[in-house]
Length: 102
Length: 500
Image (cartoon, rainbow over all chains, first blue to last red; front, side, top):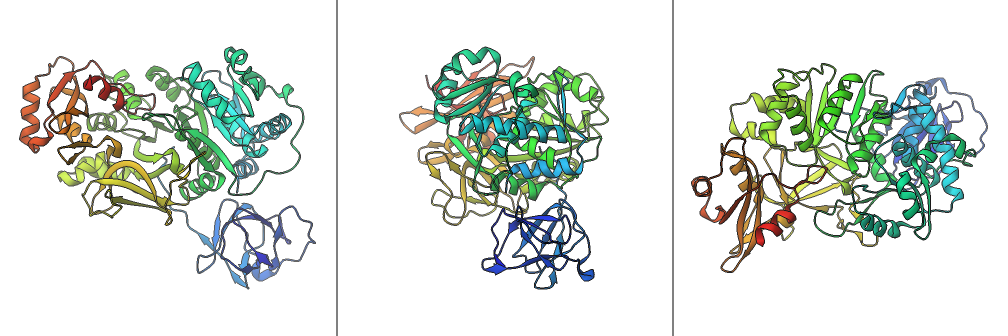
């Protein structure tokens, strides 16, 4: 548990999933993947079992937000676990399709 | 947050897809090759102790490679304008030392002798045998690290180095590009210079969407047409002067003969209505988008999309039809306001300065700090107005406003009117010193082929449609107007000449 820093990366303990923090609320927050707490990328963690209620895969390139939109994560590596905060699953954010301009 | 992450995601998802092809040499990189090449060059840059990676060359495979190498090595990427004089280049180079310089062979001797510059040719930079060590570890994820330093075009004085941090560029990409959104057969033809923000944006958005980029180093209309056909190009970005030349080169054709081209976007300067209308006929399969952005805003902040082009073109309502020359509405995550000189927000239709706010907005210059205010608003120094539905119209630079007898006049408004006259092909309106009024109005006019300019007739034409204060007191005929290579009118050149 700790404060999340914009731009930092977290990895899953249950799968290969990795996310980058796009937007974070101030204060301590614990993000889970597959039901197990995520850890900063690059740190050693023990593999955990996936919670079957948190097993909807995350997809590379998709963005996930909390219901109040204070937290936004970008999936940079796909995995089998779902993202959640305090047991509440994050939602996949729709990207508006824009005309190509460059 | 780091632009390297965008490439990492692309190479993990489609490693063997073609990423970049140099249109002149035919050399290509896949995403994985680009990623691995950056890993090796980043070690070379680190070993050199340089704090900047400077690229001074036309577009080639070394352009995207040097951008990602810089990001991995943790030093800003500084692409320089190879069209500047040697003295100008040297003076910019000394502002960004210690530098790892990648440049053309014939420049090595002089620029390599500049203090704190370690120079390498573009060929050596691309040669794998010159870079045999891999960088140790990952790139920094600090969003405040500087990704790119871009010298602004300097149409109005000494170039300033705009600071773009990783957070600005990554925010722009995340909010405007869908990851892996491109099909494998999609290919973009990129002809904007590598030292221009549109060149940087093209690299990043193509990588993130997985779109193959074909580079056209030195734009000519014939070469553009050749590459577009040969590589079955599906999307391209051009500045207005380029589109005008492409249309000229295609003239007498009923169609451009590029059925693959599905998307043609433009920006960087004012698009004449006649050019865009002709283009829509020649490229019937293409979606047209008009993009407006600045270096300081990490490229595009407003877009006029394809549907809006068609609606405007088909409309008989003047207000809707006029939108064809607008730059559209703000992108998601970007706010735009029009304000007066006192910083007060203006009503729809009123002309003032364009202010912009959003995660992608930097508004910072090296050595000068940020010009963004406490609420995050960046004054663009562009003049414009917005209609009731949020469509933005550009009216030139705020500094170009002519103050005649205390009245603020927009050159763009007068130019637009002059361009509707049957004898006028191009027009530039500037303020010139005037004893009575402070500033007077002067116009440089390019006549349409076969037409001739009648000064009194043009003055009468302006008087008929506008207040008499808008009538140019001096009108001169020019063979052509001076533009820079990205299609910006060099107004100060016109002004200097007409003031003399």
